[in-house]
Image (cartoon, rainbow, N blue to C red):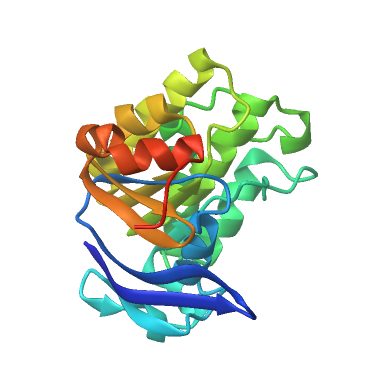
Length: 238
């Protein structure tokens, strides 16, 4: 479980996260909202890239904000980015192994852990293949493999399906849904594909202009009038 209380982030005169309190109970949780709602800033706070002005974040009973960013990786925080982070000149295996090396998992288990993560995401390419030679679907799966290797506890997925056609998004959805059961990790999924969010997420929270406007069971949240108005760009100040 992740508990967020009164979280606020300020950049000069901008407040991308404004007094947000929300609970992500476990399993796969959605975090949605229009562009500029504060979703990536929220991920940056959890990752340690941004220091909030106020508030607390407790993950599995531990104060996440008091951990140095490098300690969060060893603790079990994993993340994908909107921009692919895998190194094109390196192989699939080496890209995943880079994350394992800094995860705190046993070095003696590295080869088995890396190959297991590659297999888990359904990546059929040879592990020695260079990432730069892969198609968009395979590169996305490499990113997810990097996020689940080495005993993850929290996996943050930032638009993992962006640009993928429906049939490839379907495979990714199946992989995401299996992460909590396979690894025991809590997953937070940010994506604009509501079909993907609906398929993967038991609960969903919605941000708009840095404020939480809804949270709860995904089906109920997606029917919420405030959420619909926010996505249509007609939401009035609450």
